[in-house]
Image (cartoon, rainbow, N blue to C red; front, side, top):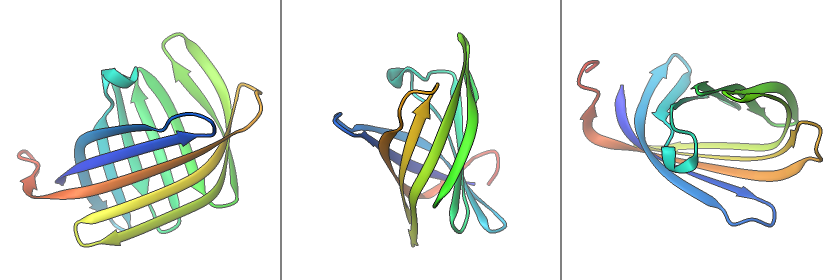
Length: 144
């Protein structure tokens, strides 16, 4: 398991993008790259652990802790899921339009363009970019 810097940028139509940098971990599990990190209290998601599984053409984002949800991003795919929070749950629909994954050396760049429907409200256009940079010599101490 390698220590990585994970830069996440979320953009929604007509809003300023939100950019957050996390320190997390990367491991290879067969053909899947698995990223994991703890969300920041600064984003209102303290107590949430995020795991991102990066396959060949599919991204699965799993949140656990104070928020629980599993989101599947695959081009031209519609995913219905429940977003569970401490105060209740919401039904959401995710329509992925584009997924791009590039890996080069110690870096990975993920781009996702999708529409999200929350609790029956009209779909909103979203873009997410995830830039992963492996830190040299930063093995996880208990797993190295």
